Length: 308
Image 1 (cartoon, rainbow, N blue to C red):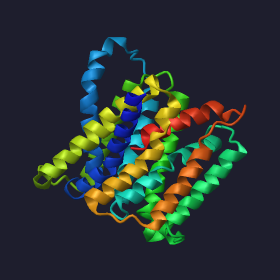
Image 2 (image 1 turned 120 degrees about the vertical axis):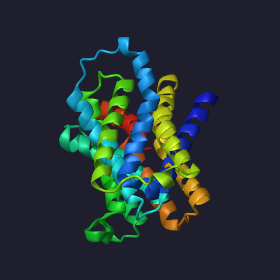
Image 3 (image 1 turned 45 degrees about the vertical axis):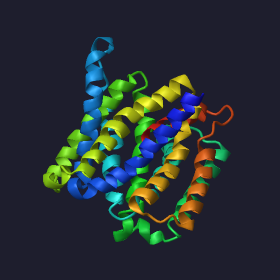
């Protein structure tokens, strides 16, 4: 158990630090450059493993489903997060990212016919209230010109939620290594196209020590090694234990943001975080004998994997 809890803390530190890495890469790489570099670095780590295990893989894969999950989970979501961080700080982004299980539950109800219990609905409402507290009840941040920031970060969490439910429905029989590698490659293509259409990478700035460290940390550790640690906890411990990383990431991101970026920790951040945690906890709990029982368990796992 000591190894498992050590791995859990280590994973939360890696994924919490990802929000700082994105801040560091915004100027030299741009929003879509971050997506391209992050996905490419993660894929480079996993491709040799995929080649090594190629004979064990059934290559009759659901390619359309893999591409769609890659678009939402890696392409769009990982583009929206750094876009949000052009306006809000990394701590706020990480807290809003923690709403992923709430959106996953709603999307499961709306699109995939999952049944939510009364407790889960209460959790969803509490989670939304926590978001309003985090925004200091400034509803204008979700509309008009103020949408970039809080609004785009919530949209990223919605993309994660859809990708998680779609993965559960259409990619259950596909191996984790295959899903991870090909969704990262899809994200890299999207990031490259977006980079060509918007702004190129500033190579002179990117080759400095801090951006290089951020690329390694965000791609190789956050997108590659982080997922392997997650599934180690999931298999050696339990899905429930692995899912608790969802609760730890905002706390570690808050510490990293304060230490490395000098971001202020305000009362609204603390109170909003705690309220959102309560909402996530209630909305992610299994409920009796409803059809949402198994879905709730899988939402916990998928949301933890995505909240990085």
